[in-house]
Amino acid sequence: MDIGLFTYSQGKIGMNLKVDHCPGCGSIYQKNFRNMCSTCSMKMDRDLADCIDHLWKFPNVTTDELSEATQISVTSIYKFIKEGKIAKTYGRLTYPCECCGVSIRSNRLCGDCSQTFKEAAKQIKATLIRTPANVYNINK
Image: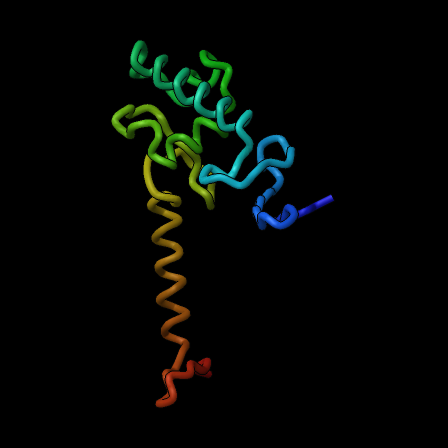
């Protein structure tokens, strides 16, 4: 049952309580700035602290080695890296390109996929004709 975002009003006081499903565990929680329940929030903090502690001791580990040593999922470590919670100074920590899956250290796409998208955008732009009313039509 997907409840989405509900507002709960209580009596005459008019207190509003916004709740949602936690993306981590599916439980219902009061909306907050982290968009997750307190249990999942505390687990994420512990996982991040474990990663940082291990990186202080072994700064040259790879993402897979960090995951294996800390028993934290590779997906969670990818998220920490992308969100900047783990410094990019650890040169062997990588995450997959969102298009082809090759290991990268920054951005969302590797250089090859980024270039492919740029070339495709140029080709699409070349097929469009701009009319005076700022409406684009396909050039045939």
